[in-house]
Length: 398
Image (cartoon, rainbow, N blue to C red; front, side, top):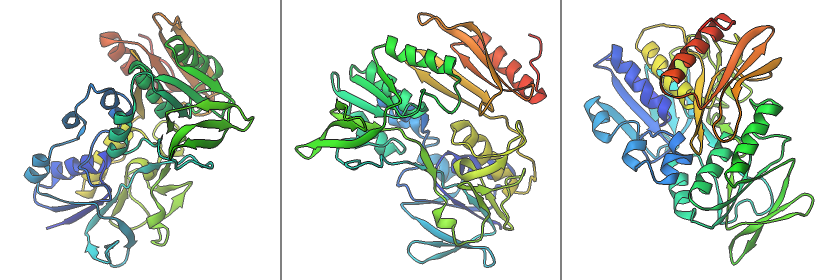
């Protein structure tokens, strides 16, 4: 009977269990998770869960009964410290050595802290875990002064949700534009104007110098130009870091923070796979190694890694796609939007009723796309058309 060990307790781990059980109903599955929660979906933490629309039970990937029914041994609150490739064991923080026949590395990533004086003051929030989301949910109140540091997806989503709850919200982004990782200036300007139209103050080119405290809690921020921003709470949305430090002495190939895997999600060690936020994999669209921190990627890679652990030996061919929401505006991102040669916006960017698609090209090929507010059947048809176009490198006819 095959012994499967999965290190990491997020969506990729839960999906890997599904993949294993599709092909192997009898193998022993042990999941080792540093968190004390069963796997849950992270996107609602900055949107529906934070807003109070999504109850806790809808955030979890599966309930406890599902893991029992699938005979999964879940070890919560347990940290892994290293892997011995030759002996095929995982060493835990307690010193215990856990043997495996097949191992999946899926330890995800953690939120980057606000690295300024006072960055650990009570009232400065990160948002990565369910505990983070619950604490932030309790803190956001109508008329609370909320300052979000960072104009990335997580920062912008928190800003929109907090504003919808009646908070006074300011976004401070140190770069020249929000959504800097995928937006060209015109697209970035649209999202900035959208938030401002809904009552959020957005400042770009602003660097936070320190967090001010009063009475043992946050009172505000001061920028490098000594501009003060009063705040009742601060949310740091300044990126994430992959949890790979525990593998530093284990002999795995690690590049730019990610565990290097091949097209079958195999690492450089026999019988060891990688999936989710920590995996640096050959992207099927750009053909270049890439690491992604998206829900969709964790879902698809986890499932494929699980199947391959159980003997499928299949290449990972899933095209990247992820979604976001700002107020009632939906955003879908497909393919590779990094460093395009050009971006063409097709449709209306009117703030009252935006509805458009932004096409990203690189080397005269369609590489990615951003869909805004394309709904229902039109959204599905356009999504499928764009996915086909990105795979082929050209936009097919409707």
